[in-house]
Length: 589
Image 1 (cartoon, helix red, strand yellow):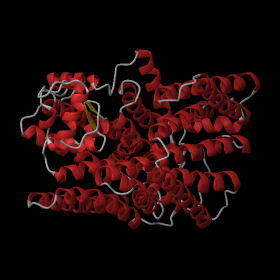
Image 2 (tube, rainbow, N blue to C red):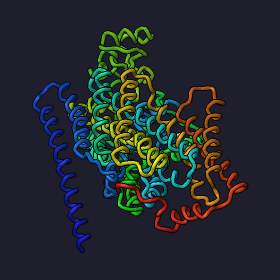
Image 3 (tube, rainbow, N blue to C red):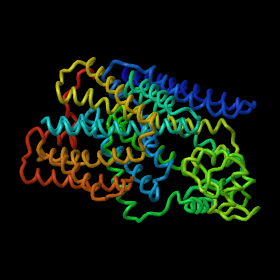
């Protein structure tokens, strides 16, 4: 009875703190809306929310500082499933943000969307509960206990650190791009500001800070995209969504977007391979698995997976509705109008390169008229659909301005995008540092390593990766889409074979090495044989080929040349039918 009472008290305290955080964020955004209503300058109103969001998330992470190994690497194993799933949805949305901003750049976004959703489902059904059942801090931590020799351990830890670092750079870039695009901040300042916030989230509190900051980020994200849709619905606008929305509006939006060549249907085979490759990569990606590690037990990890899938679907639906609504509004206010009679918001967006009128960037009616005359459009003739082109970034971030919903909603939507990138960068940065500070030091070198030394090395790695991210983001030297695709491909090619072999009792260290090398070599060969610069579809295909080839190579080697040992049988038995006691108890937990 005492344990039950303590559990209820702990949950009540947690809910109270979460309620306080919600009230704080809601009050701040409400005050920004009040500023908008009383006539404060629009630029000031739009600036306040993004900067407040970054500072608030950083403060939340800093206040959760801890020297406990269990809290730092697993948030005390006490996160309720609903909150863990909510946080995971924020991380997955951050992964998807570069593709949403530019769609896929090559084909239909359907394969990317379905791949990420399937990856969330796989985490909730397989890898997440497996990690929580065994008590491992990460997938590489679990696999290092299965394969004891230095070579396979070193490979898996290196790939975990590399993929996490790559994703951290992508999240960093997403947050910096959004801050620069919405506020007009200088890129060096934005890179430093975001980098400081990432360190404050992930450094003092580890996974505990990351988890609760990601929950807050998810709330800001959902609110930022939901409130404009609610406002439009109250004004009588249809919600353009397939199945659950207005089908006529959705069909019109799809037609407009295809006319702008932002997306086009892809062959079914390409969609399927993209979906499978991304799903396998996400299901084994270290940052995406962090929320599952924080839950109470394997059953809670499964419930967290269900919650994550629900909120990821909700975020995908809201972003899709935002893009479609923006496309319809741009088409309605621009097509059929003369070049000199467009809304000021269109001219402003065109001056920033987000909209082109008659194939040119214009900043006013005179330039628009001159551009259309140069394109042989007669004077006073209305614009045709082919005379307008729009970048996808504008369709995501420009809806409040296009629909004249106020600068407060523009700032809130910007805050959601920045928060998602910030949460992803912090989670990935911690996963990268943990691979160095815990998986390498504790599992690879000395399981008697002092807790203080492990935490110090982890935090030192955090600073190093953040400095690299700040430099690359300030120089705008990286493409976030390519980074995310490469990380998912590497994760699929290396960790899918290792997970499969870990559950095969005959597989030993040599077979794990063969699986890793086979997966990496196949992935590299697949990319090299295609001379074109890799896009997300090619990277997903390469990751899928590497996963299959590595699993087959390692499995054949195990079947032909290896025998099950008592240790390998015991590991597999604990995973499938035991209590999950496959690891030695960690010092400090």
